Length: 388
Ligand code: ATP
Ligand code: MG
Image 1 (tube, rainbow, N blue to C red):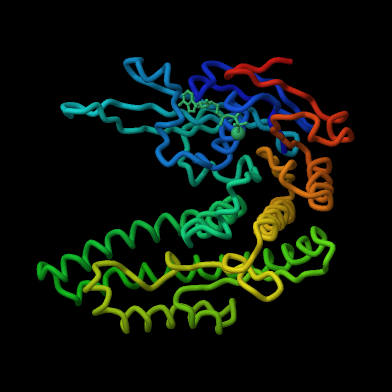
Image 2 (tube, rainbow, N blue to C red):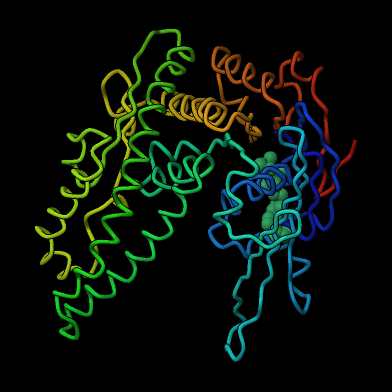
């Protein structure tokens, strides 16, 4: 799949941009702080309806537009997928909250497919993209939540049912946590927990089993790719650390056994959960571990090994998206080539050149191999404008 065109309005430092694209490799080059990463972020937003880096999506609205009566940003793209065109757009509107002493905003996001408003969960998987970003090393060194987020975005791009299950699970969890606190404060009875446990377990089983299946595929693919990225023959293993951990011992096809284990752990932890006012059992506490040469790469890996783990995971994700959707995802590489040594760079570039569409950024064109440069379209980025 590839973008035929991309258009941005008041998105980050782009006041207005119309870019006609098409298949192939694009290199965005320019000095620091000109808008290279912002453009990749916009494509990623079309893929996932979320920003890859903003913690508050209001940050995406151009500063100049914040003075408008109704500050708004828009990202739109025309996608070509199996010869069919789809228009995608994400609009963000910041509404000033009334009466607040300090100016505060609430953000409204609207996603459309071919002009028709759609929920985020229905848009996911229309445009698939894989982002390679130097900050991805957080995946190895960051908190478990960053690994779960990665897992969720990756699976959601191939499996919409998963995202829906995840959304239902999160809603149930919030309500169950409210109830736990009410029980702690004596305003509700612990017998009421039963109402939430059945639906909670159902979604937890769905999430756990989908993560398991996908991680089995992912761990095989990433181990092979890791081997291709390093010459030393050092081993790599990706392990799923489910919550509750007893689930590792159950076969993936045994959905009912999975449910039983979760139910048993929930009842064993009931008093603890009431005491803490939160649900401590379930896939919202899952984690992953990455071992290089049999040792946890988070604790023992060198920076280079950690980076290699991330590159192997991302390349595995590209392969899995292809295998599961029959389509090439769009590759977004944010200034990563200069960080990789020759062997790793070769392997990444092979994937780039073999993909239908890739967008690379760099501050220095000389750092990009001649072979790639000669086959790419070069676009200079200067202060939120593109220069050809
Ligand atoms: P680098 O090479 O340093 O990574 P870059 O070209 O990738 O640079 P971007 O991250 O795309 O740079 O950011 C470009 C500029 O956009 C920065 O100066 C940043 O401050 C600015 N910017 C970020 N958010 C907004 C916003 N909401 N409105 C206007 N400008 C913004
Ligand atoms: Mg950047």
